[in-house]
Amino acid sequence: MRALVTGGAGYIGSHMTLELLDAGHSVIVLDDLSTGCATAVPNTASFVRGDVGDQALLRRLLEGAGVEAILHFAGSIVVPESVANPLAYYLNNTVKSRALIETAVAVGVRHFIFSSTAAVYGMPGSAPVAETAPLKPLSPYGSSKLMTEIMLADTARAHALTYVVLRYFNVAGADPLGRSGQSTRRATHLIKVACEAALGKRSRLDVYGTDYPTPDGTCIRDYIQVSDLARAHSAALAYLAAGGASNTFNCGYGRGFSVLEVVEAVKRATGRPFEVRLGARRPGDPAQIVAASEKIRSTLGWAPAYADLDVIVRQALKWEHHLGAAH
Image (tube, rainbow, N blue to C red; front, side, top):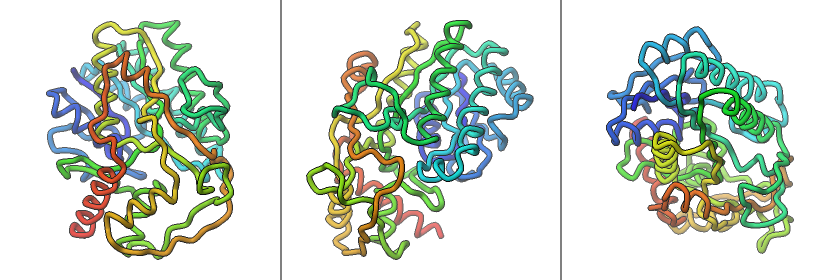
């Protein structure tokens, strides 16, 4: 299959590109390199530097290559940043997604897979949270993603486009073969930040909130390994190609770990202490969010291969060592 991967020079997009290439698909990567790295794009993929909102460019790419599926990862992802600068998030995550969807329909692209987020649930009333839970995002980040979900659903009802929305929980780890990992500058992902602190790349790790209604007072999250997530996209693509109806799935393991549990896992893996500074809560952070993953397992036949926090942390650390050696 011929696929366009937007944001394919980023963390998750680069792993998806590897997954598609490993399966024998033809891949075009579109990325503006605002947060991605050109070196993350494999040589066997075609790389175009450009803006996902540039409809003239999109049309040339989609028509010229006969693209059959779009996997859309390009977007902004930092919750506190979205609270401080909401209009930038609505532009990047919603307005530009609309441009991409409109162009896909215009040129007859058949399938669309969208990188969404558990942030659309806001503060869920239960754990684990199922796809049918109320959608009440707490941040412009979550709202901007939810708006794109709504656009896709409305578009699919009106046009011959089928889609899968994948709501990510907390993505972590690295390609087990060491080909890609989390390389984003000034990343905010907890496991990466903790690994950087343990290796002396950061002076400390800040913990935001110790008074949540959780066993140790810190937030609980469901961590999904990035290659497992890429395989979930492959399963979604195969599902659509086989005639599956448009659908939405959570991407998580169904088990949560607190911030302090992650810190201890990093300390176990490195054998090194590092400064952990306890601070106040940030706006937009739910106390606990864990995926109900039965739907993706039963409908797509997806099963994780790396559902172990210590394995995920070791992968992240190995990638941090690689980055250090590369520089």
